[in-house]
Image 1 (tube, helix red, strand yellow):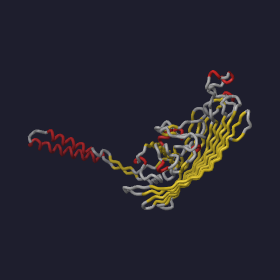
Image 2: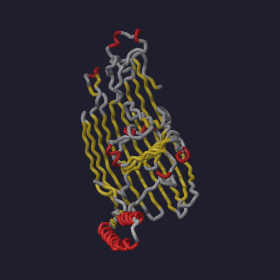
Image 3: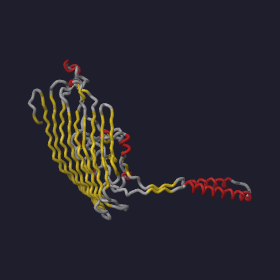
Image 4: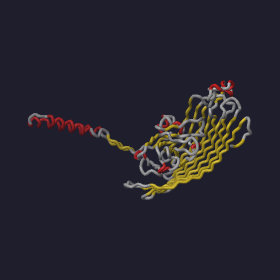
Length: 419
């Protein structure tokens, strides 16, 4: 199992033991009112106590020093200060926190992060994120997402596997000063494990009820002081929970996903760093276990539709599949007084949603929607270094997105056509 390298440890045991004895002696003198001659008889006893205290402290106080290999710290390209020093409401989730809470996707953050809500609409197509009530279900998101400093522009790509995640930072409140658009409600920053900090092979296998199981395998290797890489893959399967009465009680929400990730960090010199990240994921879901709730006017409810109320009974099988490719290259130069970084990202998404829109056993109408998205982004940031009183950061960001969406509505009384 891959473990992070521990920091340098320096610790003293019981450093205040002698000081406590000295305090008790001082109190003793303050309360003494006997003649001075009798006080002289107490001095040898006090010296004995001091000697015993020194011996006891010498026996118990130890200095332990553990030498470890050098740990490389990969910093954020925009912030001048540590996250805990910034005047913002933030929640940090470590790898241990995510393992304890079984966080394997962005939707699992709802129960962990205050003022955050991510509804599950039945598929990975729509991952609306709300922070303090601010969010967007359609169009561009109001909460930004960065993975290893690479922006994810479209929220159809927000829901992906978290098998290789080291830490998640959730910043609540507007973050537009440093992160621009799509950060009015807040920001989610996801950091994958660095191959300079982790070594070895990480194998995970899990299983649960309702035919749910998953596995992931990741290898971290530090080739030299200048280059390290990590590569791995995962597979996840869920047997589903809901049954469709119109299709012989077949499970309607089965899902499976598979993918892989590669990360390589190259340090040609003390001043330069190149960080390449490539990930791919394919997911295939049976989705939308919705049912007919009846007419808004109960008096006008037709008899033939009453049997469908409250029961999942769709004559068409709904589904959603997605191909998702993300790549990013982070170039960083450390000068004496400033840091210059250039982050280039590319994202490709191709998906298809098919849904029985009437949610009954009757063949009334269905909807098929297809998306194909290409997104290219570039961000250049320069910020100050050092511990001077004035800190500054400046930069420029731009992106280009090519989107093609086809939506076909099929009705029993109309010819299928594109909307």
